[in-house]
Image 1 (cartoon, rainbow, N blue to C red):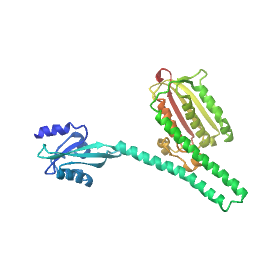
Image 2: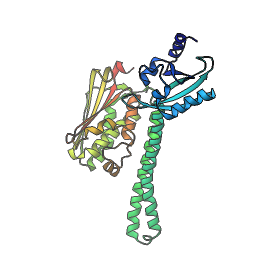
Image 3: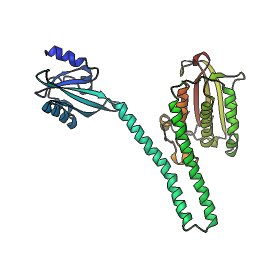
Image 4: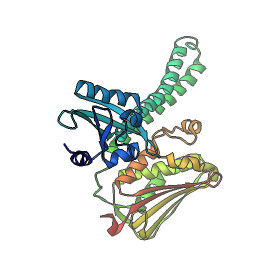
Length: 350
């Protein structure tokens, strides 16, 4: 095969690819390979270009055994670490016998696998803490506190609190799984948004009164009808208002403001904006980009004290995504926080 034909063959591979002949030099490389490994690599010894021992050994093995083998190549694209699966195939009819090495980007698979590992680790940690407490109190009640009525009542109350914590966590995990599975399915039912917000605030008023917080709704007089899942949107606003009551209670008031716009850049069309505004201590800006991550907490100790599972805002994000909407968070320390849910409205929602 001529050099031009060889170069054309390697260039046709739709991912980084290079050819190494029996002299262990790179005899052809496509544009994707030079982008990944550097310019002017053709004609050079492959070990001086790849440098990673496992990749070098795999190519040498394919040349020696005239067979196929696979390994991993680790790199960085300037923004993140990347992982490539390197598939080596010996081709006896090309260049007197050569190895074609193809680099398949599997970074997304590695990231997904890491996310699963992190998720399992987080769930295990969140469950282990209350379970450890329960086991400790049970052991105490079976032993030293067996006949101590006051201690028994106190411990049983703590055990109930820990069991409720586990129950909330399991409930949120099931809810998160459900909303993730439905995220690509568009809602089809009509709902009246103002009525839904009024109902949500009514159900949360006892919690607000206990925290000495006043709930206020500012919405248009005319009905605001849109297509959505009323149960899921109720869950969104319940979560956000409840958070505002718990974490922003020092401000004494939580405002819920519903406004309409003929064109909103966030959804590229008519939109209904629901803002949940508190006057509390606010959130440091360093936390804002990560608030919707599973189990991420800006204040872990306070969140656990208040019964938070660290999954609420992740659930909110997936529900808003299902409605083709957007979630925005604005806050500064000492300035309160504003959570804004932007939903397609009117002609723009179809």
